[in-house]
Length: 137
Image 1 (cartoon, rainbow, N blue to C red):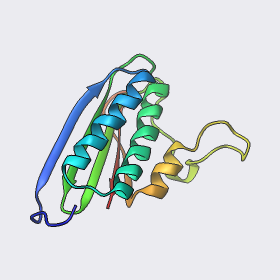
Image 2: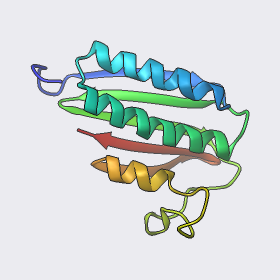
Image 3: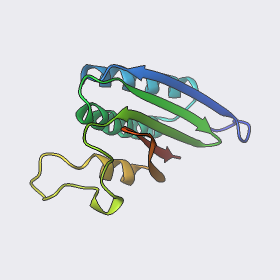
Image 4: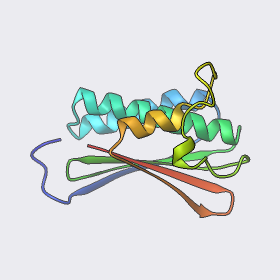
């Protein structure tokens, strides 16, 4: 994403149906959008994985309830936000991101997002709504 003017911001903002079938569409939409903006393969792959984890968490937290994906570019960074309703409350505190045990079948999503991102912020913009924002460069 080089050769861009400093502080230029560009945004994709789209709702998706809260089921696992929507994950492929969300990844494809974001990957295509980033490709159109000159993102390299490595960044597109990392963003796709982060998006997959966050959107999967959204679907798991509230099956059948739509979630929203917002992706913005600013300078050389990509900012991914997935906003969803949660029937399970807020995600765990950062120190508890990861599986409960090595053999657990789930619980790695936020840990993966954290490892691939420069920064991850969990916010609760409204009661019962969770927004997770990951910044990647």
